[in-house]
Length: 122
Image (tube, rainbow, N blue to C red):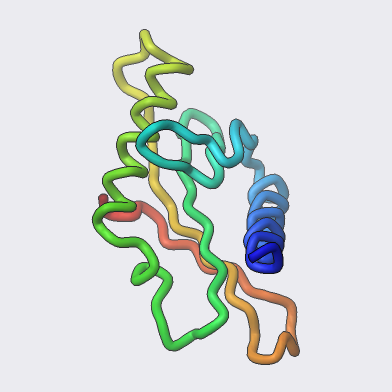
């Protein structure tokens, strides 16, 4: 179990570096509420991004298959709680939900690649 957590942490670190290198500010990591957790909350310009990170070792499965309806509901509720806590007086805030997959090559022969699914349908 410890090895799995370490792999997930390393995937999140890779995504954080990618986001920072592309002009995003990281607002929160592993933001938890009673509804669930969001791996990364970032901002660029006037948009807040709620990001779920998945480590993909088996490329036979699409990253979207890793998020079921229950997880999508939890993401949405958790994001609403974050917005209420951080900007309660702002009625409209631009938001996007992303799924970012860190895809490992078979047998780790190459550097992992990053695939982004923008505007994840919740």
